Length: 299
Length: 120
Image (tube, rainbow over all chains, first blue to last red; front, side, top):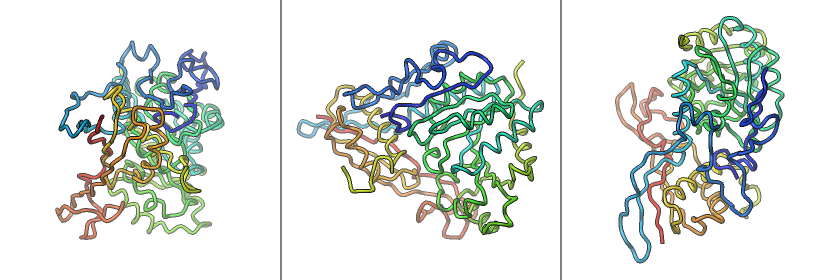
């Protein structure tokens, strides 16, 4: 099993692009030749220590993630057993890699957004519209995370954005290592936006830092108004909550006042914007939010 | 295997987290025969201790941690209310101050960390 996403055979990354797929991305729908998530039969345990970013990644900018730590300290001896103090975050490796992604993005003046939601709340529709309407104004590329298929990536590509598809297999979220490879595949220009469309899931993605600048949770009125209280870990981390499908409010039982009150409890610091990715209502607020955060490109 | 309905796939991020735990220990202490791992799962960490316990035996099979005990402590969360200024322990995953305010900052309880291990 994979050490970062719990998947059986590891993520498959496919670049949908106007140029040849780099060898380290593994081409179309093939695992990387040196795929770090490959499971060794009989080994029974996947060591994240074997994860390697592409060589150019290592050579150019960032050393491979290494968790800085003191040497373990032996606390006591009891019989033949020794207790060794460790004090290390379980997700330290992912967090280290996420920090490297963050540094890489900042050096290049690229804004990365981690877009999370339940399946079917409209992430891809939102990104299609955003790609079309911001074309010529802001450069957007997308890292598309799904368990299977490149259906969403093709939709984004058709809307005009560069996109890399990450298929996580049975994995339920993207992690920082997958995003590092996705970023190298996209090679986004300075001063642009990368939207990381996470796997549709309101639980697991909340735990994995990807190196993004901001977390956006997309909710929709058709999901029901109880999501902030049911999934507080996800909503608590949101910088922005987009409430989508507001064009359907007349047809669904959704108490927006209650939703706003509940969201305030779960995520007191999050901004709420109401939008319809289908009709475009309120969408300019989303574009303004993005525009305020995009750094000036480097020369 | 566990009770029907309790599968690794019901605890997907706990599975990933337990794998991360095993990786972290085997990297820090390569080759050591680990007999006990002590883990701290904060009340607001978003991780279910029982799911980690369930995954632990599966994930440690064939590793230096196989057969090791898993001891989990679950420290309460501590929050600071930005309205009334008091510190409090939230009752459940929604951090609400007893004064009714939701304007709170989480001070502790989000950690998910290995505190120590015992080796033979």
